[in-house]
Image (cartoon, rainbow, N blue to C red; front, side, top):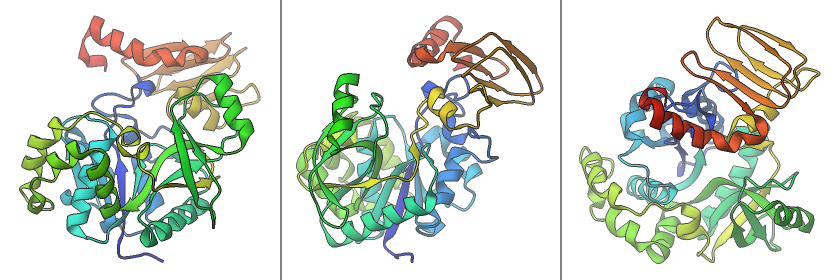
Length: 359
């Protein structure tokens, strides 16, 4: 069943620098067929939400430079469904902008905010969890975040601690940003912590109230001209006001301060696909733990390695263990999996030494 007040906003403005050299400034990972399915991550995310609401109720928040690419991947959308950020100011201004726009469109708007680049293995269960959250936020002035039941002491995710609740919806005690391994192990053992997936559900009115209370500097700027939203004047107003907003995440701006935050523990096979190692874990692997993308790849005495080769090039890889090998035609990167956190820094270094063409 599709509720007429249900909306979805997909955040698709990032650069995906940890997926360099495949993800580039001109064409970041949300526009890539990174899973080898024939569809971009953005397209897969959009189609997932069509089980929840109609295409007319799905909005994309992206950087202004990617507007044409969004329309290319999602031709079902109108231009008013693409929110173009003139600057990258993190997720809080992005969420506030979306809430203002949808509240002006529909004062009863009940919305889902989700990233464009997550992998969901069990889509029916995912949709059921979202519906449960939407039912809760429709009846309550609540900010709901989907929490992922952890299966390992992962140090790359934020954590949500929850207390006892009813009907599978639990009050949130606190948020903890990426912990050290020892702390992550304690969280896993305690049984009352979840991974923070960055998937939020709330009514537009409820989240705007939270911004007014906890981050009024954002609503003062973006709420100055409510009549401009969903008109031809909107972009000029946003271009002027949005860059003045503080660069802060929605977690820091409101979620960690609000008292009406709830979570729904979910187990729908989620990965944030944040970097190459998480992609390798999700790909089909051979008996030696290798995963490949490319037309002609020969592996010899190679184990637990991801090899991605674009174009018609033949690649021969021998004697590697636990490596990432990515050839994008103009850039070849070879890096141990254990050092993938350095890819972002290496990308910056490439820009400094060779200029922006390879970024």
